[in-house]
Length: 66
Image 1: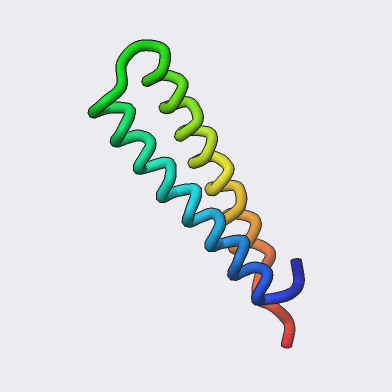
Image 2 (image 1 turned 45 degrees about the vertical axis):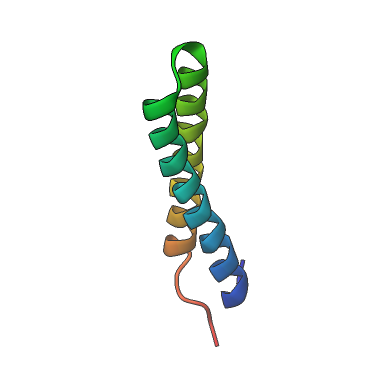
């Protein structure tokens, strides 16, 4: 992951996962009930964890050499 453009696209994927997580949480809290609500919230939580890990790796791998 030494290419700066690759890091940018990977961080965009993480931001997309965060956005999907927020949307899924709002929908599950407003519209869903029962085991479907818990399942959607669980998937939302997994998306947030994956995006946190991706951003953590991208940020702490340091700047890209020129």
